Length: 293
Image (tube, rainbow, N blue to C red; front, side, top):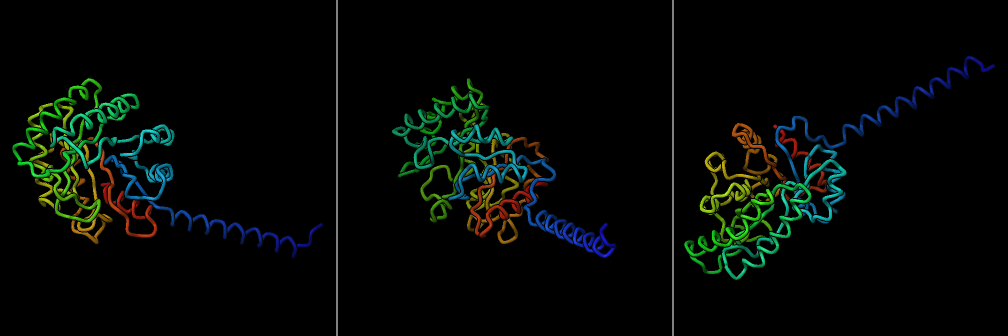
């Protein structure tokens, strides 16, 4: 029979071990990034900002944070996203270096879009991105005409497949790589929306990138309300720098998210900022919480 002293020592050791495990568990829970709580804004993340993190790794973090999507990723990753309960909110296509401002680039862009539209339709992806490309000396009038004529050649196919084309406005002021795109033609939200208006299709909308709109125009809330019928997707990033969307930059994101909700927005908000901190997922979690109004 064990002595009372030995029994007491064993009990104390067990209690100490249990207390230590509980403390470790609580510490781990406290350290784990907290993501979506409300979920009224459907959130997504753009992989290129998190390079060299592989898409599957980012997808696992996105799912853990409660995001709904990892977007603008290669279709080869879409089955893996589905296994994690994620979708691809918007698919990539021909890239911003070429686009519909120049007729010589129409055929290549249309071919890429047609292929991606087919892939989207098969996988249940509802949107695909498209671009104007660069001005390269074209006047507004000529480039606008080219844009409308070129996009009309593919928008009918998008209608058939029930996939929405999203024309992205990019800023032309910042010359730093991937923070701005000097000479990009659709560097104006009004111009981008006017192209969609002239095409007159429910499958021709804009990607409203808050970062780019702030740099080129400001007055983000006013433009969000004015152009809301044409907004099919939204992107975030901090100004200046395209970094975290916290109080180190000038845009107040929470009121913008509330505006989207008030307007009845049902699409996705894609986090497209470039993290500056060593813990990129902590930065993503912070951005997610800011937009989770």
